[in-house]
Image (cartoon, rainbow, N blue to C red):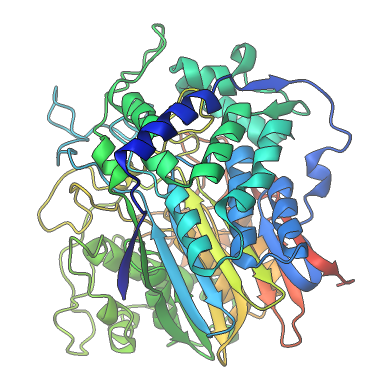
Length: 615
């Protein structure tokens, strides 16, 4: 099923009136204050909560409290998810917000069906195939601030349309009601924690390149201090406008023109050394944006049914294929070293196939059924040597052979440039409805460009396309196309009933984080909190394995003896040597809910339940 959901278009007269309304609605500027907060936010970052009546887990206590309040007031999981996501647009503005996109997975307790919304950003109609090629050299731009801090990387945002679609399809709240708590939060402000301060400091050079971004996020020229209150009245006014007028106020009228102006004619500080090339976003791209309602991916794994996000995301298919490969092995009976060896090898094989076959299905023929078949998994699993790691990168499997023979492959493909920052939330309501929602603006801080007086950053998602255009590359640039994503919101059923929902940020490490957490829990018998908190490693079909320091210390010697080369996590854009920041909710047979979030990663998360009980 592929049903595209477009917003109703208002008449030109109504849009003109809306533009006048918007002009008055957004006057004023964002501000920060050093006023004290009676209770620091990190005091409420409880990583595990157990109880009944509904549950929510996010990376942020304000967002979790807002979602929980919606559940307590009778709202369903969709209502709470949208309200919490809007709150994350306030407190996690460098990872998510109106200027980005994402994927929404929903289990409907009444029908027993899993539905999804593809709210991924799209490439502008005018975007050329060589958008990321330096005309001076003819070579791809390096993956540096010069590439990601630009109008070139901005895709048509999908987040507002995702919220509206989800509420219209399955929610009980109006958009106005769902946005109201986040509107109050933006106006009142939140207390800056260490993570927010560090992420601002890491992006200070990029943010300083744009006067409007610097005014909002670098008050007095520096990152907001820990313990001060950060307010965003511009975003509050934008949320109010969307609540009153719907997403037409975003995809048309004055706000749309402002976004186009920011992308096509970036206003930069004269002292910046960043080139900030202009981009291609047009009014027509915004007016024509559509979410897609489509079937979830499905893999039967042992006694479980695992549902995820279909292309344009590669998450559901790559997690599903890796699980199908691992299902041929007895992971429960292995030593830790052998289990992790098989996990890493299965990841590499699935990533090889991801690179060869996964892209936007509106533009390329994705062999999804084959990739998720047990027969194809068996052909790939036979390549796993239990005593030695294969040389990486491994070649993709040949989906056209289907002979059942071991080792039939095609030529390998290039690695991708997907970045690491995103956010994720998990919600279960008292009726048994479940939402797993991953949303992003791509790199931490997105494009670095704030829409003036609107309070939100624009994405730089188009860097997820392959930088060099090749006709046989499923992730090649094309106008209107959704770049390949690794976001992997996942819902697990057993006997037709949900037992677990989970997801994570982390760029292409999202896939490995979800996969490792699933196998930790389903195969190795870890409690879900322990499975999520365990040290992580990511093998994405590269010569080395990216791993957290704790993982290297615990498992490095044994895995290196098998031929794996482990390197510490971290990159040029963040000071954190960690992988992901997952959330999950486990649903017990008696309705007992165990909501879990990170105890440490990205400053720790916040898990809450409606009626807590002692674990």
